[in-house]
Amino acid sequence: MHQENSIEVKSQDKATKSLRKLLDDHKSYPDIKFGIKLGYKNIGQNGNLITFPYFLTFMLKRFVKEERFQH
Image (tube, rainbow, N blue to C red):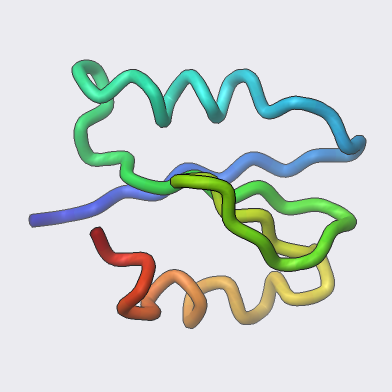
């Protein structure tokens, strides 16, 4: 099965309403399992939302391929 991920780039540290809407709408977007938020933060995960710092963006592809994020 093919899995999609959605990415949201934030210029400020505010809510991710549009990304959260995609992640919560399983009927319309069944292939989207995780969302990735890029920002001025540390790596973190809250449910199916992963926060990734700008300075590590070059490692994003490798990070997503990790087994622990394949549900």
